[in-house]
Length: 448
Image (cartoon, rainbow, N blue to C red; front, side, top):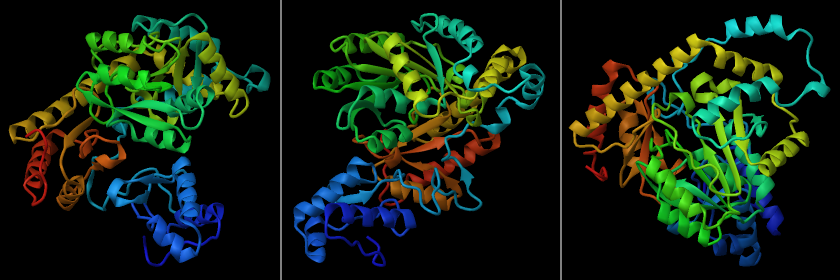
């Protein structure tokens, strides 16, 4: 822990509050280690049990994490905003940003023409009485989901402020603090942060190119996990996509505990480039989320949510006690984008562009003896035994990549590279840099 910050307090509540204040002020940063329990107890002249309780409260709220022999450390993105809070790691000046996870903004559809047309159609602003999920959005979403095999019934569709908002409402309305949630390992960093902030327990399941391993999912549900989150395509960070056989195996594994909440995340949607093989409907409580962020733009903050009657009713009811509804302007905008054939063609072209860039980099790395994972989506995952050294070596070469510690629980270290910023002329130099970094003393690329 930085020498300049001194933890204070005489009770568990005051000690945890002091550490939280350090995070808010920026004096305690990501990865900073807290003192061992006995050392801090001696320093503050309190019992070890008091410090242990303070640390446990901070863990429950997702501010710190246990790091094995490395002790207790500040989480990468704790749910506490400081004066310099940022949603992602800073990219060094002049470095190529391969860490963001963002889609290529050059490939997003223009919103201006659709907003202009809607301004003439909407007329008077909507009041509270007309707020909610628009019937025309449900009418447009239903055949799109049905065509992909999602077992959606007419009317059992709502809309949320993006995929993570949907997941938060689903988890809070079905689970209690301490309940286990099966997550992909490595998996989506934002979901891992959310689970920590909600006081839930992540139950990591390893991945392969076809999704989470069914036997491990079965073991987890039989051991008492209350929910499972599965990414159907373009899994972040590995690019895995659930195959037809894997979907059937996962459905069979989940049938062992029909009371488990199944959340299916189709965040890439039209950009995925491979067919959807849904797992939805395998349990009594299920939800299928299709976000607009990757194809149409993160700033839309809109996701369509389908599910069983009770699950949808809970989410809608929870929204009524909070945000209330997703702006009907945004809902109309999404419908307008769906109905525009030129937008559909542009998104198809964008998906092909992502596939071309991802495959080009993966092939270039393979030619240099570096194994990279990424069959779909906008990311590649490279496993290594020392991600810090690999991240540093690539940073020194002018490339910012995301450290795997943000995405993994138990799985080996790695780095994630987002290909959105890559041009054709950048692929070979980047592959050379990764291959050179792989020969950095102390770095071993796993799977070479």
